[in-house]
Length: 441
Picture (cartoon, rainbow, N blue to C red):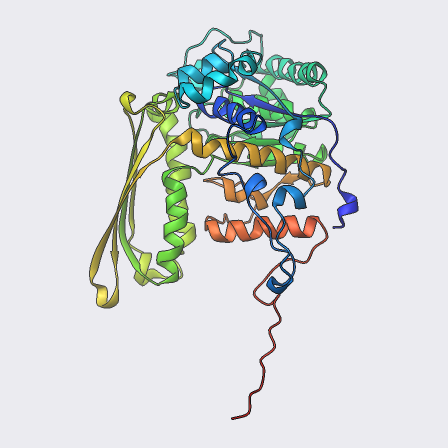
């Protein structure tokens, strides 16, 4: 693909955020802090990472933000929905992720961002209860109201275009049902208030109908079913998901490829988490935890390939737990006990205690997804964007494709996609074309 096929960035880019809690407000506040020169965008590939072009000897290593025609941070504007009426400042203060010294200087800006009433039903997040919600006879009516919101916010902000990144809480675990198989069935299901259709699916539908790229940052069923996958193709809109890869799973996708590369066996991997933010409270319900458990537990099998290496991984016992612990707040602790074995089967152990900050890790993901999805839209990409798997615990892939969880392979694919989109050659180990000199002895 030639770079001439990418429509150039112009105007403002509206970032729409369903769920203006800890992650969304940390993202918004962080972007504004960077724009004011108060902080660096640490953790963001789009802002801080370089991309090699050509051979290493050519020494062409521009920043991704300079290489790709991404929307600059100054051109981002924000809007969102939430079940609580707190503006972005009050919501950020309640989330208690950012210290007062970082939050207070941004108060004037954050107070201007007030959430629109959410499309919400307590059935899908039993531990949430807010009054800032839309009322309508059917889910189809709610979806139309969300479409109106999108158009209105684009007009209000003067944005040229928009993207949507789901930052809301995890919904209950749902499998694709009959209503998810075709667009016609899905629209009828909304009109019939089918219980298989959760609120996040309404946001995804509304975004796609308005030509707005959509990413799902939670593990629940949202846009990853045939009806919306087909709608994304018909509307020429890119989609990606699901479940931001932040704390414990991030560590697994870093460590597991290393064990496999060294052909070290794994007998068991026990993972437990404690967290006390709103997400932790929601996940304290078994139905909501099931959504998270599925995305967290599926990582190791794909990376380790026990069907190819039965002696090393066939009998791996993998256990995942999440525990709600209010005193910890957003500073989640992910603890892993890994029982490995090496030469002659001798056992060894690895302990990992990751004292992470979930929203601090997720905020730059929201930024990168917004900018990359907008780039993809302007490049004419449509449907599932597997090259963005780098950012997700359970990457959304085409029917018949196998998810890639190895973070290093994901990263390699992301950068090569950017190279090809810009008309550069993809990089492989053969790119160097080394010539071996002959020496006289």
